[in-house]
Length: 73
Image (cartoon, rainbow, N blue to C red):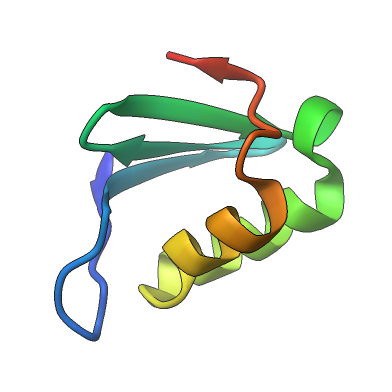
């Protein structure tokens, strides 16, 4: 799991892990898997980009894919 490096201070996201068709996002209450199958390719790819940039991932999740995760892992 890679540490999420939010550029503007604190974030509710602690870390993330990217794979070809998914992203796992670690919050204080656990890790959530967002996948092509459940969340959609476009959303997952955008989330990967935001995670790598260290900017806007928590906001994107809350606005666009909040409950569209595949599993809590």
